[in-house]
Length: 169
Image (cartoon, rainbow, N blue to C red):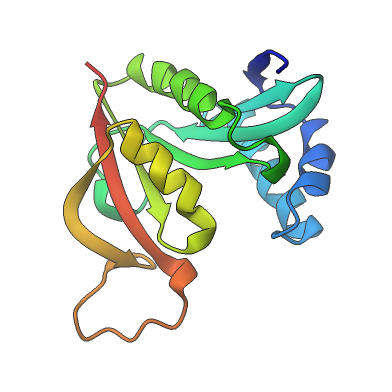
């Protein structure tokens, strides 16, 4: 296997991501990644890309603090949007991206947080976070922007999120 190179995400990565990530509409993904890069330019987000054999294999971003969810207003950096493209999975790319972004978070805090979707589409990420010793925060499953209550009707499994954190030192 080729070496995994982690580097800052650039605008040229956007079209590569669009080709690799079919669950998103192309326009929606272009806009999302453009926003990430605009925020990175303004110091509001760190966006890392992983390359294998000269090809974009995935990306991850880090917010200086959680803006929503269980860790909002707690001044804890939040890992946001870890993606490893399907054909690059099970090669250590997610692990490498997480190691690099955790190192970045550790420069700001002794803890890092994230939210993971509970649909099957996020199964690989769920396993990775468990292996990396992320612990649920105890607020239960969130539906959208609020903790789910026992009597809630869930319209979209894609909106179910579990918030977790990890001590970095």
